[in-house]
Image (cartoon, rainbow, N blue to C red; front, side):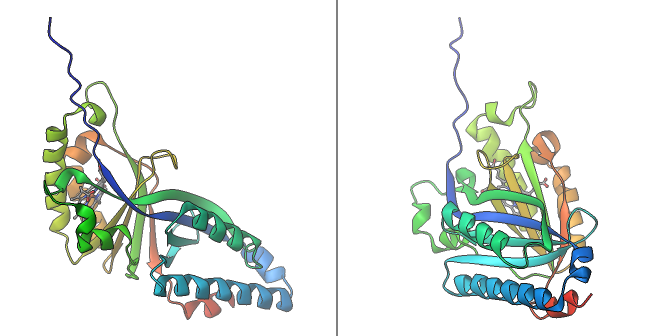
Length: 254
Ligand code: VOV
C-alpha cells in the first residue's frame, strides 16, 4: 500500500501593516439640503481627519491614499495602513463619529494585512534583515494617478486545488507570475494584502499606475499564466482616480 504523504507545506507569510479599504458613497441630496454651518463643520472635521492621516504617514506609522471610484459601486475609497488592527478600528470609529460621516455613507470595505510569501525567498537569509522587504511590508502608498482594487481566492476544486499542490509546484507557478509582474516594473505597483480570517476573500490586490490601461494589460496577461488561469477566482473590481488634497473644497461646492 502506498503511504499517503501530505505534499502541502503551507507557504510562510511575512505580514506587515494592517489595511482598510474604506469605500464611501456621497449623499449629495443630504449635502444640498444641509445648512451652511453644518456643511462648514463637516468640512472642517474631514480636513482635520485628513491632516491626522498625513501626520501618521509623515511619522512612518502608517499610510493613506484617497481616490475617486468610477462607476456606481462607490464614490470614494480611503485607503489606510496602520501598525495594528486596533489602530484601524480607532480610525474607522473616529471617521464614523465625525461630522462628515452622515454625508459619506459606507458603500463597501475590505480588511487585510500587507503580505509577502516565502515563495521567492532566498534560502539561508533572514528576510526581516532585508531593508527592501521591510519597506514592502510597511509601504508608503503611492499617490499614483490611478488605483485598481479587487479581492481574489486561489481555487480549491477537486482537480484544481491550490492548497493541495506541493511547495515546489506552487513556487514554480509563483515564479512565472512574478516574471510577468516584473515586466510591468515602473508601470504598475502592486500591494498584496492577505485577508484569510479577516474578510470574505483570501487576498486583496491593490494596484497603482499613472496609466490605467496598464491595469487591464497586466491583469489580462496574468489571466493566461497558469496560477491565474487555473486557480484565480476574482471578486468585484474597483478602479479610481487620485484625489489631490486641494480638490476636496471644490468638490464639495457641488
Ligand atoms: C505588478 C506586478 C506584480 C508583481 C511584480 C508580482 C510579484 C509577485 C511575487 C514575486 C509574489 C510571491 C512572493 C510575494 O511577494 O509574496 C506574488 C504573490 C502574489 N501575487 Fe503578485 N505580482 C504582481 C501583480 C499581481 C497581480 C495583478 C495579482 C492578481 C492576479 C491576477 O491574475 O489578477 C497578484 C496576485 C498575487 C497574490 C494573490 C499573491 C500571493 C499568492 C500566494 O499564494 O501567496 N499579483 N506576486
